[in-house]
Length: 217
Image (cartoon, rainbow, N blue to C red):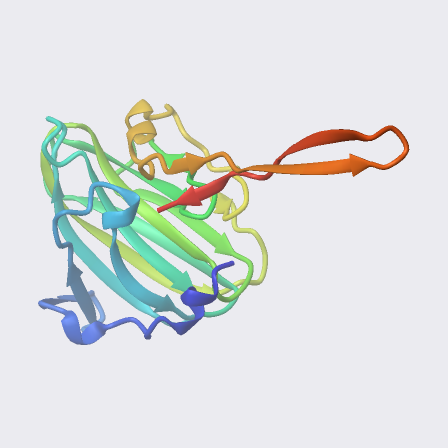
């Protein structure tokens, strides 16, 4: 858990550019993606999620390499369950959603079925945990609307994925998500060298110790 995550502001609904209306006349806030968001460090961060929130994220994704991923980052403000539905804008496209853990730099789960809309859920077991939902196209270019509903975490919901593991059901595993990773960090090997004098033998002993790797951003 990173301390910096605890200082993030609440979800900035003031940045909305529109609203969705459901059948009951309820107005639901709508956020919009901002390019570039094709890698973990470029993901659109929508702040802290708390139980009771519901909103849409509207965007567009392609399958030709020019816009391969749309990454959306969140921080849990408490233990929560996040349900999502990915509504397709094109009947000819097939879009998927994956769960990415920025701390582990791993894709933990993918919902890659032929269902419309694509549905799934994420369980986050404590405040301060960061996670990202990534939209990608398996086939075709399409607009989309990613609907998120946040509720208190009571128990693991069927079809959900834990933040620290995966039991999501997928009909296929999109290999394209292997490309959604952090850039490799430069690593420096540190060597500590000491000289010791042995008064009994009169010899000078050289000792070399390899220290843990130091990572540079």
